[in-house]
Amino acid sequence: MTDAGSARAVMGNHEFNAISWATPDPVSDGHHLRPRLGAKGVKNRQQHEAFLAEVGEDTDDHRSWIEWFLDLPLWIEEPGFRIVHACWSPRHVAALRPLLSEERLTPEIAEASSRKGSVAYEAVETLLKGAEVELPPGHGFTDKDGHSRSAIRTRWWDASLTTYRSAYIGPPGVEMPDLPIPMTEKIPEPDRPTFIGHYWLNPREALAPLTQRVACVDYSVAKGGPLVAYRFDGEAELAADKFVAVH
Image (tube, rainbow, N blue to C red; front, side, top):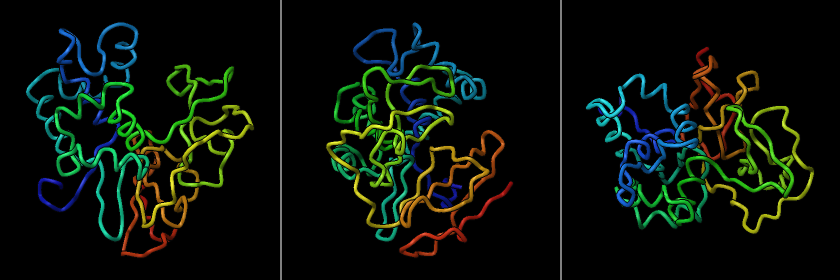
């Protein structure tokens, strides 16, 4: 559909991870930007193995898909709406914008985005994986894949949620501390309708906007949930009756 000009798509965290997995590390011979070796490599491969099984690792087909992923913009921004995979953070968009080529990663920025501690890394992590905060010392949880975590993704679209417990978004049944988050900078409310995915909302929940200007259309279709879309007609405030789902 994108090739035919009847659809537009943005990069998600899985596409970015696939690029990093396939790209040799130019400063570490025999390694890749997303580690393939050691314990971390085992975890990364487990997360990526379904895709690799489909395309064949390091084949021409694999390389062709990586080129297509690299051609995806990190966001779409129009006067009346925005689309980003996980989080619209103006600060991180402003940091990345002058480094990109038409909102797309260059090979240099793809490399920088894989280096923890860089400006590009923090920005890409936030836009494609969501706003994250460290839990207080002594607190943590186990994610859906059995990995220990000391940081949580937050419901960035709702500035009224100021504690770890209220702002947490993730696997159910996780006990979060009911303590205030020492956030130095909140993400401002979007100034226009903003469409996201990423968060695997429970398909049993009502299909509805997260706020008047933020809608998520990811309802776990990869795990048997419905395929969801929002029929946007340029309205300034989003409405539940504009969601469309195929079960």
